[in-house]
Length: 286
Ligand code: NAI
Image (cartoon, rainbow, N blue to C red):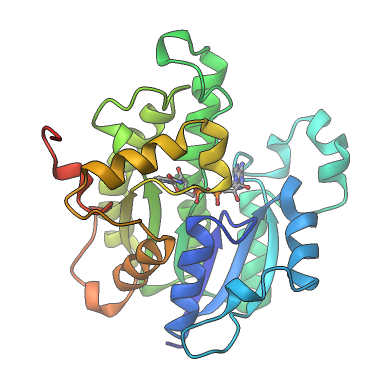
């Protein structure tokens, strides 16, 4: 309660970021959102027109309020990094101050500080290609959007995070076990994200008393997951084979995130926490 959260990676009401925002809002946090620039217009229009009102409902019946939506493209750290063709792209030209550094500055000007930073974004342009067929460009793009983006966000937000604050990112078990089809270097990107969670827990812990954890989530039919192509099979597989044979709800990931950023988890940092109905623990599914 009384905390302020910046959640990067919400562009609709289907993904983990939205569910985390709701759990944090239900616990009394003020919600700021970072939305990918090309998705900003439709997200804001849908919000304004009430398209998300049903899914904005919190357990007490009130509607989640988003204090402000910031355009963000987490693959660019400063304006100098933005290529001309992106600057000129009409989906970008209408927005401003959307590089990571500028967003952190704008949040500082608007609100002064934050307590909670959530990274719920990933992108791998060649995700449908096997690793063996992935180009250097595709691999580096996956790492840039899905792993370095977290380093950059923490780097730029740490100076405005109150001591005792916490960060969360979302990872996937393809980092440590073979998940055929999760290609394009996305498995590598998640491995980097998990390793970075440990190193950054040390660095941000010592530097700013900030905790850094990541949630290894089970499959959810989000927009990003549908782009991979086999999400329905993953959900069915999980339902059949996991210790808990039930649908995995985005809210269950949201609630875990709310716990992890709360004082209840004050000694947990550098951890990868599974929220997957236990699927990761299976050796052989029969
Ligand atoms: P989602 O589509 O709700 O979220 C991904 C978001 O990333 C989108 O809003 C997209 O606009 C944004 N994004 C992409 N590139 C960006 C950039 N350069 N700058 C800023 N934003 C950018 O999908 P989902 O699945 O909820 O993804 C959230 C996180 O959860 C991701 O890290 C994903 O890898 C992770 N995850 C998802 C699982 C699933 O089955 N859906 C399983 C395990 C982890």
